[in-house]
Length: 464
Ligand SMILES: [Zn+2]
Image (cartoon, rainbow, N blue to C red):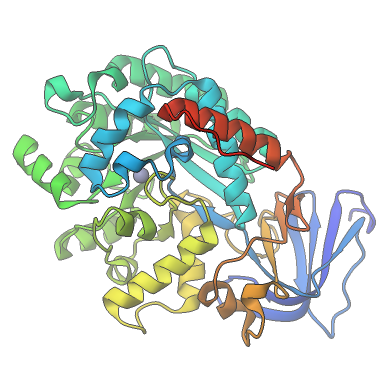
């Protein structure tokens, strides 16, 4: 038994409302969480007395939840948020407009973009994020490495995926040839990234996945070989799927198959796969996805922003798919606020399927424990002994929550606020609403400069 005042131990006590997100939907009041060596050791509430710990934080005015899990993002896109020429476009035109801008990405800009996006995620209550990086302009082979370095420095749990595009415009694909790579080179680099960075251990802060961009930017051969490579290395597979009618038309025209069939025939349907969007599945496809246990990253804001459609979330969940949430790339959202995304999911699903289709708790479950399942993590997403100590605390005295009756409902129904305290793997990363690991102003100044440079904008926004 470790000493009660071990410096690696942390107690958050007197928590106004503690949402465990366990199978019984337990919510405790006046509660405490004790953390030891980065893991949840104990939770409890009066009349039990809280144990001692090396460090104590008060949760008196807070609602505490498991750290949010973001299952789909393109961090580099924070550099092209609200990019005027793409502000009113649908997916394919939006992509055609932005590809040439993204063709100018380099390690410095991707690093700065990752830091800015991760800072925004952390401050919104997110403790684990995935990223799907698929743009590798010629000569820029180390962009994944840059974002991994950013994650380490800022202190977020990270699931980067080595993305890819291999079918350029000259071969009938959507992206310009300048941002596609040869398939052998892609596979070799996927292997390099896995070998160098992937940590399969329980509690891991970094796991790599493989993620060809979409059926309309890679070949069926690359899809199949990527699945083989992932299987041999025990890493997960990710891609965009069934996002738009345009994608469906492309697959029918080029392969004579629907998008899901393209993936199925490449050996992708299984528990190690999660896909982003999943809007245009028919009933039979939803049943197959559910049986296979494929995860879905629901990205409501991006789907609304691009007018893509609305994912059939209640049916996907009933079929057995874990459905997590993703903020998606910051050029199609254009935000990395995870709590706002959970609220958006709740609202749009109710709009599409009725008020009883998704409970507040369901939306929070998707943003935490189901998102963790999408990423293959059974050690994240709920606050139970033995799970990693990833927690987000929101201050109920904040303006948006003033007058709220039920603290859990307030998180999803009221306007999303900034996290007050955030703990990742037992480490306090945000305190008093401020990022503690790095200076936010420096991150944003550099990010703003590189974004203007990338977009070719002459005018600077002054930052105080
Ligand atoms: Zn995406």
